[in-house]
Length: 236
Ligand code: 13P
Image 1 (cartoon, rainbow, N blue to C red):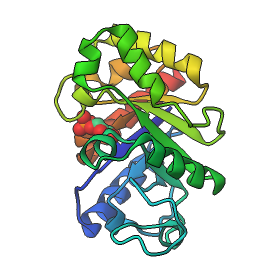
Image 2 (tube, rainbow, N blue to C red):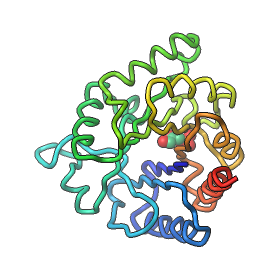
Image 3 (cartoon, rainbow, N blue to C red):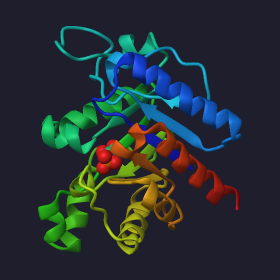
């Protein structure tokens, strides 16, 4: 299974290093065989030698150049980063990234063989418009995306569930993941208010290949507990 921590705009460089060390220690001590991804803030990236994979939350579709405020592949290469999150709801809805921009980014980093965690998910008003409308909205987020890309991971994160403490029912997650699995055979993660209290149930569902965790992952012990849940589900 894939257990991913999106640290968003949290932690300093020093705190991130400490956090990653804690996770690494847990992975080694418990012989964890799950795929662990950690996405720190860009300014906290560093060279990393360990079991967890460190990825970047965002980067521009460029090697380098005149793109004030952005980072490109050259800056990622310095830290041997080969994993990127694309299409996160905060990038789509807070930073205003369009599907066209995401496609450009996707193709650029695909060409460089990056592992891409591509996020999709609907806002509340779309969910409330009914199942068909919701699936139509989510389908449009697959437009222009190579769903057969070998290094692709998809994360379904309903926008209204992110950082709110609300989640779809387990039954809803099963139904949506089943439909999304028809669009791509890539591993499919669930994200949106995953906590220690619900992670085990979510991870055990059919069609859920892992979780992408935000706020609850900021506590290293909690994140390790979720890793342990995944490990136990996988080996039993
Ligand atoms: P929360 O776990 O804080 O809801 O965030 C989810 C998320 O956005 C992960 O990318």
